Length: 277
Image 1 (cartoon, rainbow, N blue to C red):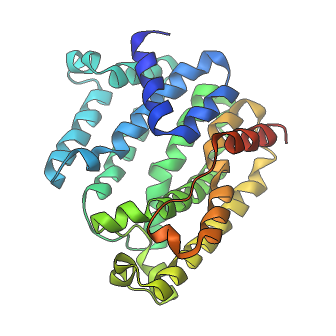
Image 2 (tube, rainbow, N blue to C red):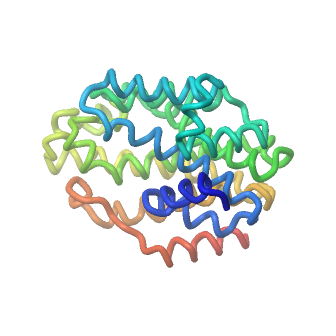
């Protein structure tokens, strides 16, 4: 493992445990490239945390877009994640426009505008969580990944629903509302109710979000049995959505204040069992 790959793995192991644990189930020769993808995803997702205003965040995301397009190779070589990612893109001929759309979608994170609808939420998931699954699938097996788009689409939405509910305490502190506005309206919960943590309306919204996530999880599971073994490791982090949704439901109103947790051993067992299906 070279220094760039080692730094990617360090970042993923420290900041994205679900994906880090999934690497053990991937072929050894693919792990460095998967780690590069996942480290890039972490860097794109954390831009909001690195800036105090949206504009510097947009500049940072644009740097990534330019870097992936091939501009400023010297700067890219000086960034371990960027250097490893570019090698991965080149080695597997990954579609650069997929990265561009992911970074474009991440601009939403920088602002406090509410998620307008479930359609918008699914589009955001498609360009972020689902796209990352597909890119990982291409690293694992280009041929096998070709028929996995529907499975990745539903898996990404389910994964994003679980992630959104896990991050409720952080989003509320930032005055961000990632729950779709039309879902909030149907649940009788305003954005202000959610941000204030009003128990009754906020928990109606959480219940509606849980149901929404489970619908997409069920759709993913209908595809899961036909997924080739070669690309299954790409889907492993999304398979935890069901466990997270169950834990969130059981936790009740406490999810507004602190995220639920799942032990690493429990996650690894879930991965092992799913890979054997």
